Image 1 (cartoon, rainbow, N blue to C red):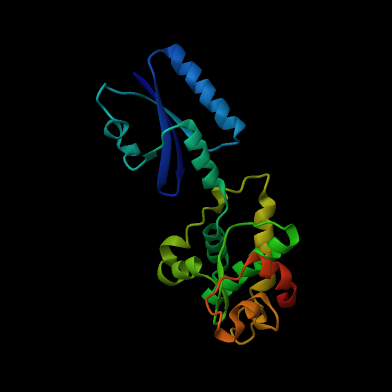
Image 2 (cartoon, rainbow, N blue to C red; image 1 turned 180 degrees about the horizontal axis):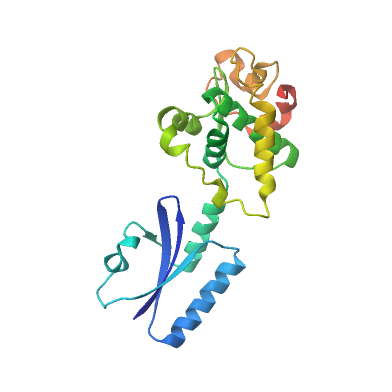
Length: 230
């Protein structure tokens, strides 16, 4: 039995989809069909493996390379997962900036917030998903705070952004660099915090402490971000 294994790898995580063919003709037909589906969906960077398995042998038993791989149930699930892996995340952005610019925790939080807010207000769309809360020293994303505080060496020093940014979208990296360079020297003093100005998104959410740790919504950011721009 010929088994065709499609895999994608992100850092140390691998996922895949496998299907069997009983003849060379079926092998060619299925491979052509699934590769076409992947191309139509714009999926790139996957690998195709051909394995001859014994009747009761699993792929993991046959080759230890696939030992930790998560195999999905259909080509549609594989495509959905591959699309999720291409989506830019706040951790991708934080890792990229932290690795390239060696930012303090305060700088990283504020620059990520300004990148998110500037893009949201100018494009009326999210560059990535984030949840900024009104903490004492300004907007903070709790997930980024935890990683920067407790596992920076492992989780913020491995930027996955290059796997998601291809040659047609290098303007995203350019935008991140321009924003960071514009803000990093202006957002390094907790005592001179532009997010604490009157009527900013943080001020309207924090409400002198009664709204501490509450979520700063996109609606509030779009309405008041202009007041905290530098």
